Image (cartoon, rainbow, N blue to C red; front, side):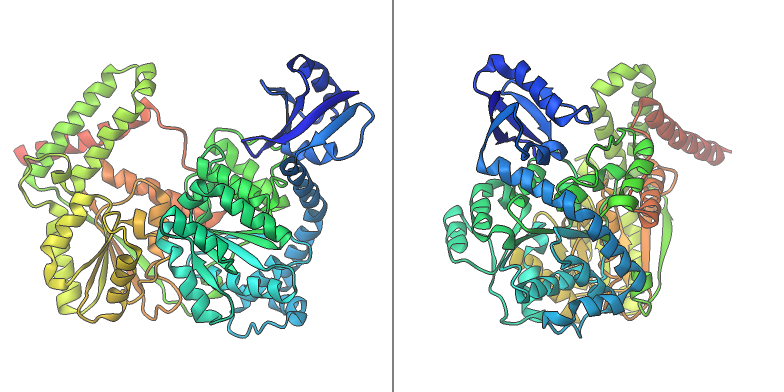
Length: 591
């Protein structure tokens, strides 16, 4: 009989079976392979034998060839997956019934909960019913931005508390949204639960943990730095603790520290809810870990997801359709009274000095790409794409890349005319999105007459950020909200405005997709219009085409096809196309 210890691995996709002596690893691997069968691939590691997570429940069954000593963490790991594999088929059937029969079935299943759901929309009641299914392990709630995922989660917690199935919830959210959750609890369920933000220095955070709140709200960074303390809190609650991850696309990468930490924390929670309106902004790969966080990897167990994005898309789509425990509602379906939205591209001609800087940078990039081999390109990928990013920044404000630049960028002049029309003549409030710090600062400096408020990485204090939002929403003199979509793209409500201008765009589709819904959400009573400023004849146009394609794909399914990985040829073709437009313009001017 092979004797070994079973331990949880650092990566949460496997267990480690460690023999008493290193020399016994090969014998142990053979015994494990015979026991588990050929369906599972076992790998030797320096410590012992790595067993894939989906095979871990089988190790719980006694076997005459194996004498296994389990650590508490490893046993919980295996038991969680055994539980998920057992209940998932039933959950899929129940969720499909909720989809097909709708709110009538949902209200029937919640009738005995004792929670008044009268303030919820029909689709929110359906979500609550799915989140609170008997013996369920959680749900992916992928409702479109602005459809009310926060209030859904609050009422689902209430139902579980009333049923005596839960007594604690840990909410993990982006920093910008941490302060919103306590306010939402106070608005929808005043005085019912004690909600605390896990903030301050380490001593203050420990004091908050010791105070035993009902709901604890924190950010992703704190989960990494205080993982052990949070796991201890959740162990105390057993399966009565709930994990909620807001804007769950932040945990899309299994190798990221935040994903690993949250996955380990999840092992000690009875249920997990992931909330996101744009769960796969870049590729189908993004959504895999979000499902696995909820169902302990059950849906994607044993599935090989190709690295190529195009090849991965149908694989992920099929798994989600067949085994994904999720619900998704679109605003067009559940908020039919929400006004329409439209998007207009505004092509802007670069200023002469700005154009010269762009032409020189582009010509140098084309020359170096032509003279570089594919192998050298891959080695210097970061450098080449930094130069491409510099081109985009020149389109916005060259001052961010050239100290010698002293002109007024074309987009700033275009924005002058737009704001004069919207703010001064029509009396409209406007949201201006700027990705680059130099551009954002220039907008703030130039348009002080509109009493702008700022929301970006330079405003780190959460109370200042909340004040900026409140001023824009409530103060009739504050006409401009100037923000970076990377900082303010998620969670905020800015529907006092019906116009948003994109002066420059983030290089991440998620930021753009999230920011669109800041003004087009529940409570908006007027038609919404987006104006995207694009520098004519530059790569900025193709950059926006790429982001727009991601948006279309994300609307069609819970994945996103972004095309092949970047290559030297693709970047060269894009740059050459832009260069040809420059040469055509020069020819026309000389003629």
